[in-house]
Image 1 (cartoon, one colour):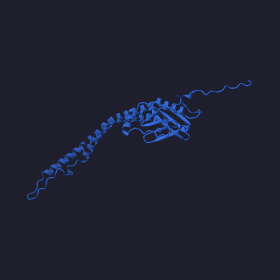
Image 2 (cartoon, helix red, strand yellow; image 1 turned 180 degrees about the horizontal axis):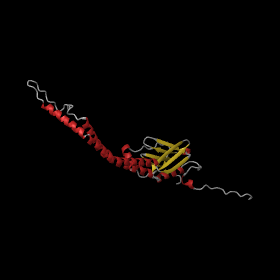
Image 3 (cartoon, one colour; image 1 turned 90 degrees about the vertical axis):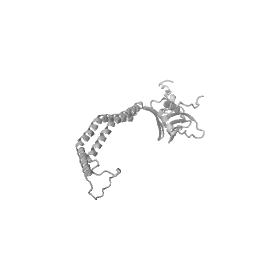
Image 4 (tube, helix red, strand yellow; image 1 turned 180 degrees about the vertical axis):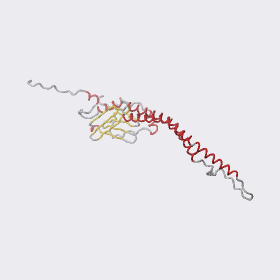
Length: 268
């Protein structure tokens, strides 16, 4: 029967949507007024859903709900757009990854050079510490003098036994050189991130804007979404009143407007 509400297929949920539903639970159902009927709905991803009723258009999320009455709609606009911001972020990530790849080897070589330059000073500190320890061990107590107890292992080392400044700096430089080996791994992770961002940007999204007076209701889906266009067609078919100039009202909006032929002067 003509005018009977029909439901448009929601489409298969993406892996991200299924994971979000598994972690956060299902999205709440829209709150309808008494006597209000749902005509159709379409999933927008991340748990959001666009719903058309016989009175209004709603966008329902996990933490929000927005709606516009059908009688107040002044413009329904749908467009497909590439996400330039995602492509720019991906390009910046690629540039940073290339810088990291180029700097990984020089940075590691720099820290290794610094560690080798401290080797002579560290060797002198170790030799001085060994001589001080040998001198301390060679002292024997005089007769009748009580022998001091040997230090326990838990006691902190004496200043002569502690590592010197050169040895500490050498260990620090070697640690930095070891950490520099992970720079290429960070570069590969950035390349993977960049590929995902550029792919999403090129894949684009379908954006829908409902305008009613000074208010707007906007939502989108990834890619050229056929279900979302069908949803907009259904919204146009349920707008009240005659077609208005500049407002797409579904398939009928594409039909030419009949006009009367111009009258010829001098005829009847």
